[in-house]
View 1 (cartoon, rainbow, N blue to C red):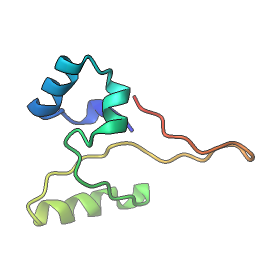
View 2 (cartoon, rainbow, N blue to C red; view 1 turned 90 degrees about the horizontal axis):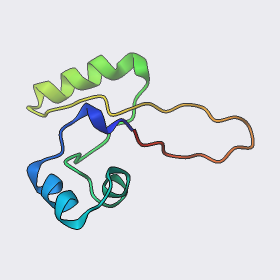
View 3 (cartoon, one colour; view 1 turned 45 degrees about the horizontal axis):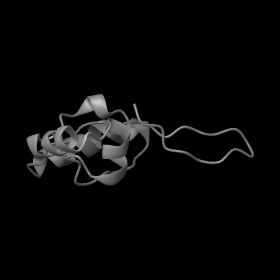
Length: 79
């Protein structure tokens, strides 16, 4: 998940500043302005975003899902 792809709303920036919380902890604790994630194949991103626009929603590509080597545990990587 690439947090540089959206701007944290002012409320979350205020919480982060006042509490002295790093970005990784913020993303693990709060939604930071992301209300919903839709997971789809990369080839469908354009169509999903077009549907969101038609519904009056703001959308952005938040990151990607990548395969892990066999036997490895799944993990979320924050950027």
